[in-house]
Length: 303
Image (cartoon, rainbow, N blue to C red; front, side, top):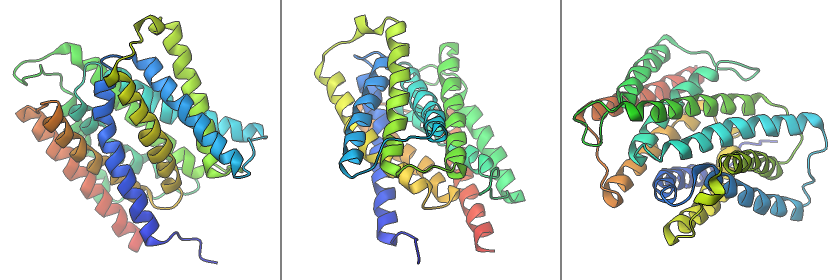
C-alpha cells in the first residue's frame, strides 16, 4: 500500500508552516516587550500541549507508556522547544524580528549536515558542502553586531545573535533525531508531550528567574501569546512535526528561506525594521546558499 501523502496535503502543510511561522517572529517581537521571555514561551507551549493532548485523547491516542517514548519526547522538547524556541524568544528582547528570522534561515544548512547521520542519513555532495560553507559565511556577516542603523559595531547584540545561532543548531539536530527515532506514539500525542515537557521546563526557568513579577496583562502581550499558542504551536508546530516524517530534509529546509522573507516583509511593514548593507549582503549569501543546498540535495535524491 502506498503511504505517500497526497501532493495537495503536502502543499497545504508547507503553506501553513511558511505563513504562520513567518509571522511568529513579529508576534514574539511584540509580545516580549510586555511579557517575560521564559514565561511567554513556557505558558505558550503548556497551553498548546494541553489542547493537543486533549484532542489526542479524544481520538483514542493514549499517553506514552514506555520510558523510551518519554525519553525521545523529552529530548526533542529540549531541542525544539527549550533551545529552539525559548532561546529565540529570549534573544528577541534585543534582536529585531527580521534579523532573528534571517539568522534562523541557516538552520537549513545545519539540517542538511545533520541529515547525513543516522539510519536515514543522506550523504552530502561537493556542491552541497560548498553551499554549507558559503551559508556559514553569510551567517557570520548577519550575526556581526551593528547598531540599529547599521553604522557602528554594537557588542551588546553579539551574545543574543550567537544564542540564536546555537538555537538553530539545536533545532537542526532535533530534526535529524526525530527522523531517526523509533516512536510508538501517534504523532499528535507525541507533539503534545513534547510541548508539555518543554513548556514546563521554560516555565520553571522563568519562575526561578523571578519573571512572575514582570508579567503584564497588556493587549499586545496577551494577543501575541494567544497568536503564538493557537497558530504558532497548535497548528504550525503540529503540522511541521508531521512534515518531518513525510518528506525529505532538503524540502523541510525550504521553510528556512521562505519564513525569513515573510518575517522581513512584516517587520518592515509593521515595525519599521531595516537591514544594513552588511546585513543585506549576509542575507543574500544565506538565502542563495540555502537554495543551492536544497537544489543539490534534490539532485542527489534523483540519482
